[in-house]
Image (cartoon, rainbow, N blue to C red; front, side):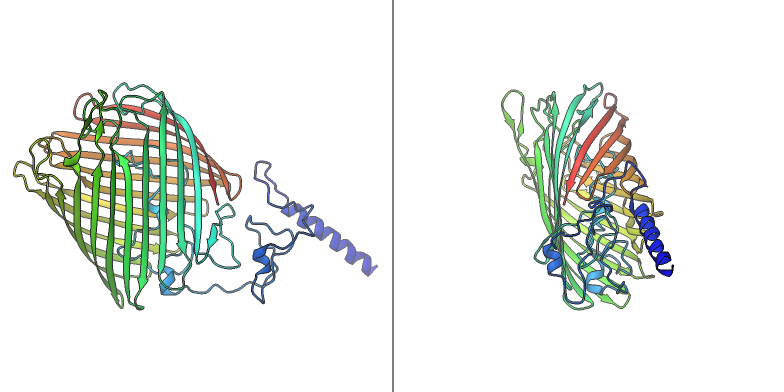
Length: 522
């Protein structure tokens, strides 16, 4: 009888386990293995065969959807060393505050921005907030069962992905009363993360090509690329060298007053540059210095009559330097003060309208970086910028600026991202010193399920043309939905409304954009 009771308990317990492992939601993506028919005689994978001594390979039927079926004893989490802590995900604790000259996590300032079509931004973006990939750790899986696992390549982990997007815009030319067109876009990207115990190298490369049908004049089809490579060399436990190289390929936005009349296509510009800096930490106080160099080149403009127009007066070099002091007030909160100066030198002493465009600028900023585990990550700052031009006819460009790149994990289901940018851009409009742009964006992601994410985006921007009585205000609002089939495939959709309101008659426009795309990642 005792034996019968034991057998009954085993049968009932097994039935209960099967009932718990079966998916309750009929819409949920299928797991990688069938719990009712596990692959009992599945041959071990290469990764399982090479597992270190003392660790058993995952049990039969273990998949990659987040459930740990390895039967290995749980291990205590270890505190990351200062050399590697700065590159871990916000969900890893504890972590060292961000370097003064390292940009915040990629998810905080790149891709899926809610900014209202700021100058130089890609024409098409959609999807939820993508958090930066974690450093590779053996025998562990990402917290998100739908996160990409990446591809190991020596001491690096590669995260390739591509998005194919289609949709429709009611006003792709951003003009008053503009006509609509269907659009398509291919968006490849590659993220690279080193897995070294000391030093660090990361890369974030993202490009796109967007086309329209029927196209307009000038043609709106255009390429876009934004890439950066960051490196950190740990000289000692208190001293490091920060290196950066970056490249941007884009065009002026349609409707920009910087564009010539009679264009057949939007001229492409390229900006390439690099940064080198050194930082030293004196207990909680840190001081850092850096130098920068950038080069911007514009293609000649192609006109509808078959001729070309030179843009050589828009080409320039920029050199600058910055000094920053910061103090670790509490673990994860690091206020800073920064002073930056730069000079811009154009290829031509005067532009085609006879103005000397060379200038010198100085910017002061106060702010703080945040690295609060599982809560708040990023930076925020406010400051003042001033730029003086060689030509006395050009008014001084000056004003308040702000920058922000914050991700707040409100709870297990909701994530909020706030972004803010400011830029003093060059222009060739006669009598106008430059364009001072300020942008702010808010994005909220909510997980209805771990595989179903809703997104709301709001954005606002102001373009002030210094020396010209013109101010453009840009607004954007959008909603989106992302369905994750598994770690590798996602389906995305978004509806976005854009507005521009200018104090100059004839520049206002409205545009509605419908997007549907698929993302494939590894």
